[in-house]
Length: 349
Image 1 (cartoon, one colour):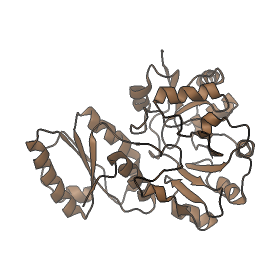
Image 2 (image 1 turned 60 degrees about the vertical axis):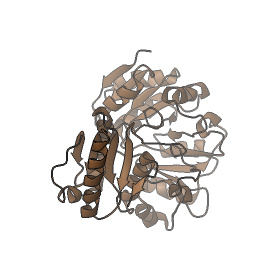
Image 3 (image 1 turned 135 degrees about the horizontal axis):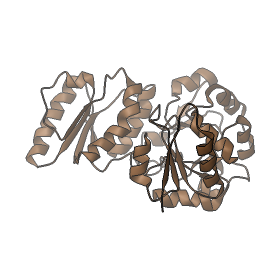
Image 4 (image 1 turned 45 degrees about the vertical axis):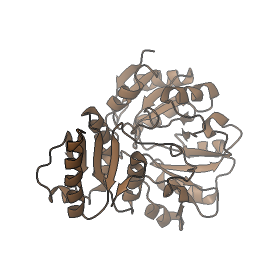
């Protein structure tokens, strides 16, 4: 399959490109497009055959549900059989933006989207290209991240091309995404909403609007069964093995130096993804790839770059990636969730 690629102005999308991409979606094809979180791989969310093509292109298990992306609040009332008051308040507060709401599904939603569940995940992305494409297509767009299943999510069109060229119909290149981590997924079906996947809209932000919110226990249990799109299987993992080192900066660097020497004796290439606070305690470290991620106080910057850096480690041919843990509050909760998943919950104290 030939995959088309169009560059587009992310702030003022060219109508001709949007129209052509929407035509592909209407015809049952697949289009990758930028959102404010990561690049999504879109199909007509009401057409079962088109949705099945997403699973085939990504190599994604068919029992892993998808998120439906909409361009207007009222579309949620069509896709869900019930939209509780708390959900409506959240829609007003955070849409468009990186918040996905899990609601009881309506009869209009194909089971291919929900993986047979009685709920549907819905969000309104906060990106001009995504919103323009959904409006022009005239349908909800089912869209997981536009990468091979299990690999780090794409934050640039180049990442999409690496994984999806020849597998999908087109890519819209709108430049790098903003947040760099996937949306928060919140189940609002019960009395107390449950965070199924942490993201850019933090627990603190949610509770500031609707009161108590709790985390899905599966988020901290590597053997638990998550209920969120994109969380059921191994995710965000590069080809190299990721190891997380927990502790104060000086302790982290001491362990890094020890492990680098050990892996060098084994003839294994090491990549280092560390913060300012850790680097300042170290001498020059010989490694296949090294990156200063910035300060631990700049979590937005680290989150924005983490998937790109994991991919760069793979490009450098490293065998082991050493990185560090972060305090699990605010955006740090989402960042740690992705790193724990990418490492297979391998943490060195």
